[in-house]
Length: 469
Image 1: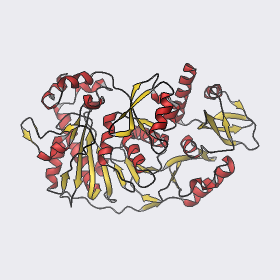
Image 2: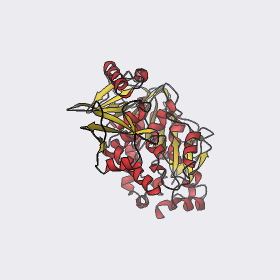
Image 3: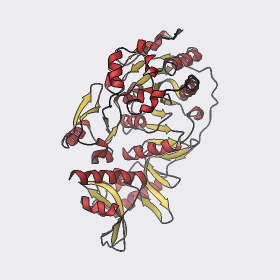
Image 4: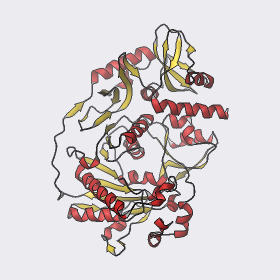
């Protein structure tokens, strides 16, 4: 409580703030418009006993009012029909206002909620670069990109402060590491708060990331700065200092009227900020019954005073021939229309092969993957991955088998099922009408192909199904 008492003078309703700060946070779903539409998700979930209410600022975002069990344990979630994301966390991307055809950068992307939200809005025109320095968080980012079927994305592992200045982006999201006070409803450990030295260190990092984001956006482009803390030192204080250092090359944009939040502050503990900071927004837990956020919209107007050496990044072209070979093989093996992958190219990076409509991308240092993972390369050739099967092969007509819950549970327990096929190899496994997994037939036996957390999440879904049957 002592940590938050210093904010009493800048919170619009102190009693409501405290009431929401320490009570459980409702779940919020963001519908993946690349795969379905809000009415379909609402119908499916309410048919299972959920009750959803849409938020007024975006019809794709629902508050879960009643839940018989976690929505993360539904087949719809596993198939990527929606992403579980608190309401406040959806605001930064809505403030960025992505437009079709744009090139966007998420400078600190994990676990992927905002990256996938940007890609969903872009639809089938434009692309996103998702940068993340932390290897463990990078894995969560890639899992979410795969689950939601995001193919117009390049994933980069690197320190955002050193992201190469070579490709000017139309928009950049700078969602910085922070003291995370706004996350207390889901992480009580943040109530301790950082030391004054730790907060100063965070503010330094935040300023560096924001300046880098402004360097990477084209003139006339937009940068959105976001934190999940209430601290002015990490919010208005950071934006104020960077805008002043820009010497007229950066402007604070007005806030869209349809988006929630209260105006940013223009002074704090005897320090005056730029008056334009009233156009930034503070979102407190009682505003949306969510966590806390701070969001600022900035526009780059001209050359920046800090030096950014331009780097010439060579292009990495996708492999058109490999994509055609994959399409032909899928048509032969699974009976799909060979034009399914028309316009796609393949990107073999590391052990994985991604499929993407992006013909070429800059060869960023630390480039991890491009597109949707479809295969993994091994000693025995290419192995089909569940991400690719779920996204591309729902319309398969051959080598696809419907299994009951008991069959899947047997496979998860390591008990192979009898299945004779003229040709051994990969097969697709359906559950309740959807391809959900990949199996392999050898010597008349079917076994499940494991793929790390993705398969463990499927097992959790089946265990829930068993418990509610």
